Image (tube, rainbow, N blue to C red; front, side, top):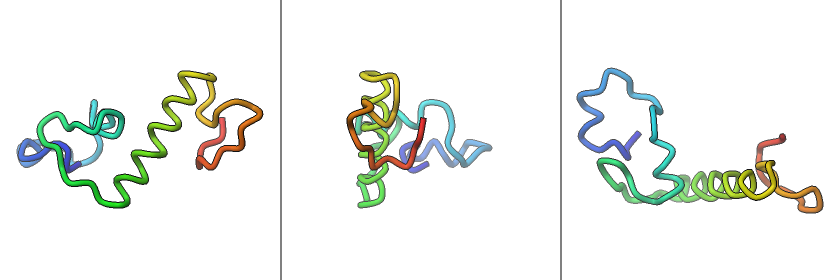
Length: 74
């Protein structure tokens, strides 16, 4: 993931790893803060919505009376 910056070059695994999702929650990378693409912004919106809904309702889709557009069904 590009949020790992130059550290990614020395890592044996190139896929998502521990704590890489925090960028999508806090908009701050651990080793780098890349420029966001439209796809990054879309993923960030889905992630933060699911995360906050889960914290608030115990369900990433939100409350029962809220229609969710998230591609996640709990």
